[in-house]
Amino acid sequence: MNSLRVFFCGGLTSYRALFGWLNPWIAVPMMVIAPVFQLLFFAYLGRATDVATDTYFVIGNALLAAALPGLLGMGGSVNGERYTKTLGVLLASPANRLALFLGRTLPAIANGFAVSAFCLVSGTLLLDVHIAAAAVPSLALIIVVCAFSCSALGLCMGAVGLRARDVIPFSWIFVPVLLLVSGANVPLDRLPDWLRAIGSGLPLAHGIEAARGLVAGQRLAENGRPLLLELTIGLAYTGTGILLLRLLEFESRRTASLETM
Amino acid sequence: MIRLLLSGLRIHFLLLSRSASEVVAITIWPILYATIAYYMFGAESDPHVLLTASLGATVMAIWSSVAFSAGGAIEIQRRLGTLELLVAAPVPFGAVLAPITIATSAIGVYALAATLLWGRLLFAIPLHFEHPVLFALSLPVAIVAIGMLGLLLASTLIYYRAALFLGASFDYPVWLVTGLLVPLSVLPGWVAPISWLLAPTWGMRAIRESTIGGSPLRAIAMSIALSACYAAIAFVCLRAFERLARERATLALA
Image 1 (cartoon, rainbow over the protein chains, first blue to last red):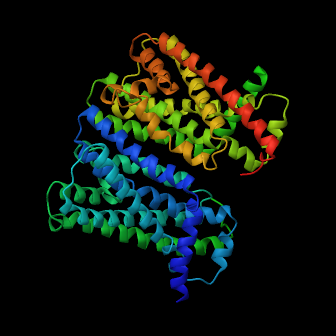
Image 2: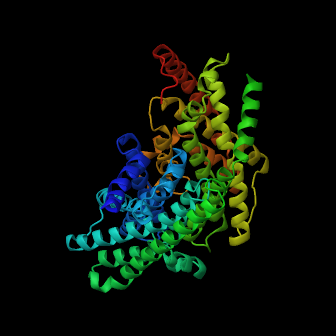
Image 3: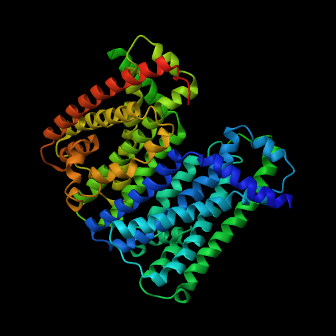
């Protein structure tokens, strides 16, 4: 019961503190203005370069919007504990580590879903893109899976934050990397093989492929493989994140290096 | 005053150059955005198009650095506990703040070097400057103009509690409307007058036309004129807000 309380209440409190959810002045610029303009930027760049239709960019960038809360939220949660001088206290507590850190992923997934859904709706309205109503429930499922896989990668960032002094700039680097290799904006057939290989090992590429299939009129069952791959990637990063958390916490205790690079 | 501006600029430039995260961010981000542009335009495109994309990615990085830092410039001084000292100094507060925003713009030279080198080595984009002297003039003029836009941003966001985040959210809107990668011709017509008021538009034109050909003098003149306008508005705003903060004793309150 105590672990459940740590999972839900601890995760929610940490996330609210991180993004200052009591203050919409922080949430609106980061979670509303930036993702919508990112979508518009690439849609217009797509028009200028004649790469693909607006639908292509609306789907790609809406799913990409789920990455920001996942990557920065999870990376920032450990960083935030260090900033407020509570990281040592947190690690000294007997709380279940899985509940402690996985609890922080749940709000990130919910937030990623909300931002992504908002972007999808805004993009379809602003660029007059049509998405069949029948595809919406399956799209919602894909968004949840993508938000989960991005948060799982963020969990790994958070774990690295136990040793690195500041993982936020490192987490930020993943945003343009995903812009490049996930297929959100650059069609994968235009990328060299090695970049495609990197993209297929990171979150989003398979989810975006599945979402585009759905919007093109396919059924969810026909896109089961990419969706399962996306889920597998998320689970693999979750496992890696948990291992890294245990390893780096142990190392930081052993070498008394909680705040050194 | 000139000594203050120059020494402030030097100190803040060196300070930013010593920050590994700043230097990595300012070099890696434009490389990644330039790479996205290369593949979107098609890596086999006209070398002029790819060179323009490199320059566009560089100016994007400069604006990004300025927007993020300018939004939080005053907030950071407040956190460091130096805001009262700077306001109390016997020089206009704007003259203390301007070197900070110009320095965040000036570290864009790292972005330029990294992006041009990346394009040359990986995509064989030829580095040929049509007007090298005018390019040497365009770059600092563009840097100062974008830095002064940052000063204007910093001065008008004083009362916004989350200025740091708001500044960061200006990245894409300004990248879009100033035609750094997306030609203005594909945007709605009402965007063009907005772009004329923003320094990155003219800075980019000056740099681009001095590199691939054209007449960059008009863009250089517009950048200088806009810098003067931004400075005038920013100094008036700062004076008004500073007085208000002193009267209400809210200078140190976050």
